[in-house]
Image (cartoon, rainbow, N blue to C red; front, side):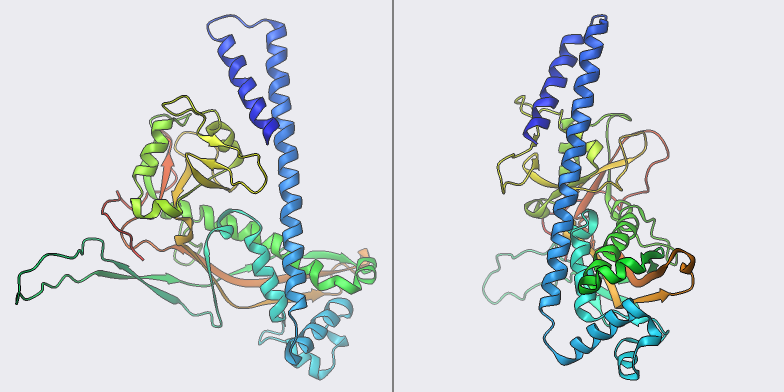
Length: 400
């Protein structure tokens, strides 16, 4: 990251030195090399981050497995592992009862399901910051929202009757869309070699696949009642930028201004890695870069003093696109309903000496907005836009 910061500074110096003159072949070569060096450093950072994320997933899975300490859970784990290794027909009647769901799928043991959910939080994007709610049933879940930002204490004279100021009460409805992973091919050789840790391997694979699918919808979903969840971009309050191809310091100030100050303490930016590189070039009014890479160990990177979340399902900088979010991202709610189930296919990939495995989970997501708009999005001018926001924010408090 320290090398990336130096390369960014070098690119800026080269850009300034080229302004207003014809670029020679040598100068063009220097520019191309600087850009290539930056791209290579970005690639290495991404690989290191992915390695760290996978290590966190493995640690989460291992931690959940070590917490298996009751008889019911042990029976479920033994039955589920037997199903993965040798198929549903190899189970005893007691083992079948322990993990078979109403649709014939194998219900994942609680520890494995929790490991998948924990691992989802390490896949980055929306799942890493949202509040996750797990429910035992799949019917609609209605969460209350309250907006009392106009209510305030007042001075009253003695023996004066108090006034009534009822808060605005609403509701956030979360459904349960069914998500299915693609069929995962698992060779018999791998089953034999990985017998000791097959549940951990499956947890990791499923977490990655569910993570990609859920993050895409929770980021870009339009919110059609029966089709997709309402993603965090569509739900955010809209702020228009002054350009169709670039972001300025003033644009970011206006974005922050659109969010009630009560949310600033937990406020974070969300953007993709390409947009981050563009923001890294912006300086404030005192000629300081707004991006602080904080290369010291344990220090969070910040933009304008706020942490940021990389979400590569966010749009690149282009006309009409919503490219940066700011606000209390934890106000986005993710609901995971009931059990995560799996099905094993013995015949489908038989010619490849492999089995097939697919899994199902039910989930929905929505922004809890009580009228104070905890998150805003910066949309570049031009194009058809990325969905309308929820109106302009105002008030001096925060909704729940």
